[in-house]
Length: 462
Image (cartoon, rainbow, N blue to C red; front, top):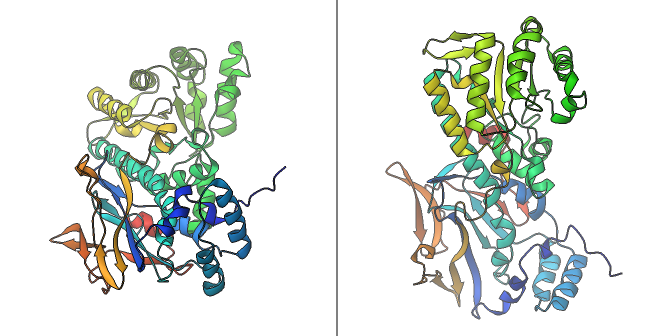
């Protein structure tokens, strides 16, 4: 059996062809500058998030001679040349610290598309190719940024409905979109980073991994909260003939005054569960417990099932009309966690409005559509070189393919500034600038994380 490769060798975390690029830049190249932007996509702005995790988790590691030897052996056998002398320079001259400088907008900032979000340049003139080597790793910030962007867009949809129909919009909003996505993503890391990106905008989550990432990399004690909730197995294990006893047990275990608990109620017949079990047999127990029961439909057409559940519960438990003229269920609520995405959320909220119910009656659980059904092209992310120093002279670098003008990249040493109240990308045609009026910060330099934001800092910006 071949020897196992290290899980911690950051040299290997790149695309294969990057290892040949040190031979491809013009002779005399001593500096490169690359930038990240969203070139468009589904949303008109992007909410930047997740770079601190990538830097803290990976780029603060020290490169060792053992890493270099391992990488050379693998990459050369793989069919690519390897910049051995360059990597050994990182080890011997820089003590294993990467000679890179990374600037970025503060995490949580909402930036219009087509603007710079992050930049990377080398600080050792003999190692300009490092800027491209780490494109692969740095580009992955697209994922938490896209999740954060989508979650925020949905937050605005829900906020609008709450502002119109609820007397308690500010209290209700943080818990209206609950992360159910941990089992639907491709990896533990995706669950943690994507789940935390959602928690920039909300405080409800069943993704424990997000809490670990939040504490370890963003200084958050408890980043999100959950409630006791049933799954189908905890109901159906009682048997169909004892379904009501399964529900009774939930009331007994979790129906504490001031508490809240959720019970999936569609294992057999949602209408019967609401109208008979919850609406008659257990109604007194639910009311006298002083807790809030959250009924969860989990099959059928989501807008139709939520409409059915809300109306049926209103008929059994009654409602109170708030100051805005909308009905609020007494003692009970509904959460829909199946088939939830931006479109079904809009439809459910619209149905509530039409039927005269406050949006506070319903919460949403979103899984794969929140953390998995996004990709780099959702916001069309790109990381491109835009400037270089070659034989001591500044050179603008860009591409402008005639087959796709939308892929024209920017040139210049780029920065994000505020002009006439709007964020805009400013280009300097020199490396000799201190970026006056910049909205960006140096967050990483020469192997060290320079800025460490807390989740509270980021939420305040968002």
